[in-house]
Length: 134
Image 1 (cartoon, rainbow, N blue to C red):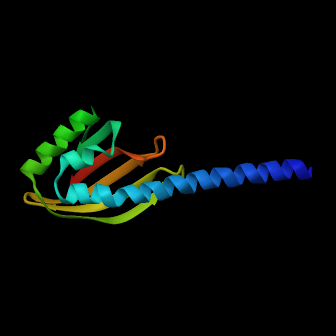
Image 2 (tube, rainbow, N blue to C red):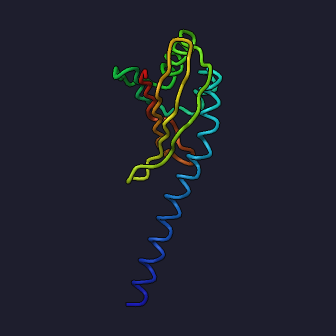
Image 3 (cartoon, one colour):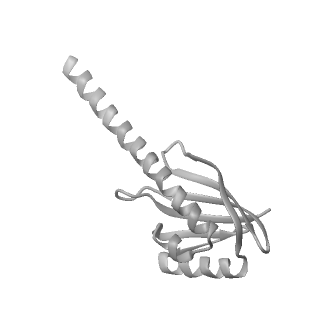
């Protein structure tokens, strides 16, 4: 009985360490993602993109590969250059999926930005970028 308890405890501990490690890595990525968006650099943002990314603008969502996402974001930044971008909230879902909510101020308006990261291998990558005009 004691051996089973020890194994269950150890497995639970390792699982929690893995989940918390993923959250910490995601938190480490967010300042760089924030900086890339704040500077309007699709090239800098591209290094944090998952192979497939769901991108949305005012409810119109489409899935793109990373290269297409970089081009879509370059077009957005060209048409609506950033004056500022700040992350106002970050957290994780019940399943441990990290996310952030930001406020983008651009030439053509303000947007609430939802960023969902997908833990992949050792570095979480952007799975979703959703811009909703305020």
